[in-house]
Length: 131
Image 1: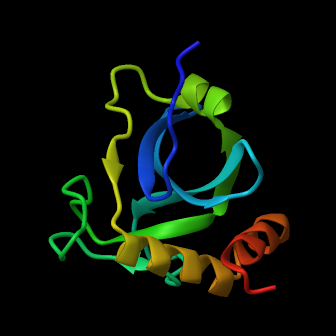
Image 2: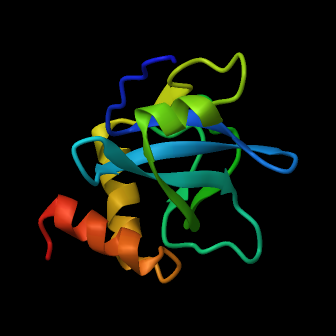
């Protein structure tokens, strides 16, 4: 099995059946082995606007080509083994990395989000020391 080193801010292109691939960003360590990942997706009319990311801004990975949002409702908690199973075949590992200032914006958005599941919001707050 492939060993994957996970760093906060790393983003991985994951298979999200039935027919999709989505970018997931590591935003918090939830245990010795697990991380909280959130989904980056193109902004739509019904998107939660808690965390909006614009392409071509300082530090934004070139992978982000359109106005995007973090879809907190699709958060996942994964360890390196689970992550390895879900990464799209042929995708660079990690696909891209988000710098500390953008990571902080995403983390703060998670705390403010009305769509992040409560169990993940609690884990994020604990990780950030805001409980």
